[in-house]
Image (tube, rainbow, N blue to C red; front, side, top):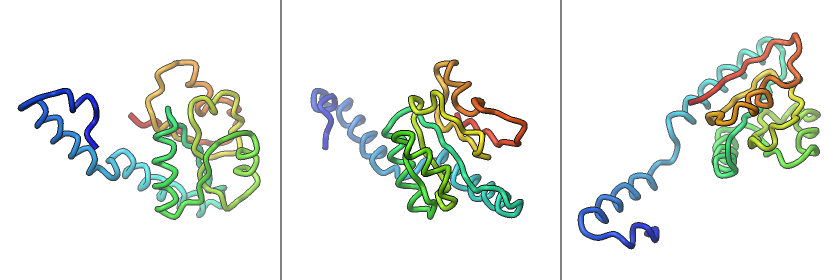
Length: 150
C-alpha cells in the first residue's frame, strides 16, 4: 500500500520513497530486539541457576512497540502478557509461569515492581519523571537488573 504522502510525489523523489518503503516493509526484527532476546535468554538462564524468579518487566513508549514485542516474545517461547490493568499485574506477580510483562509509559506510573528481578527500558525515556517509574519505584535492598536500550 502506497502512503498518501508518497502518492503526492513525482519522478525520482517518488521512486526513492517507494524504495525506502519497500526496504522498511522487509524488516522483520531489528538489531535492538535481537540483542534483547539474546540477553534475556542469558539473564533468565542465570536467574534459573540462582533459583530466582525468571521474570522481566519491559517498558515501551507506545502500544505499537508493545504489540510487536509481545508477538516476538511469544514466538521466541516466552510466556508473555501485556499490562492492561492491575489484574494483569497481579496475574504476572502470582503466576510463576508468566515470564514477561510488557507495559507502556502510562502503565509505569505507580507500578510496584519490587518483586521483579529484571526491568528493561526498551525505548528512550523522553520525560525525566518516567525515570523513577521505570525501574526505580519500589526499589528495596534486593538486587535488580535494569537495562536501558537506546
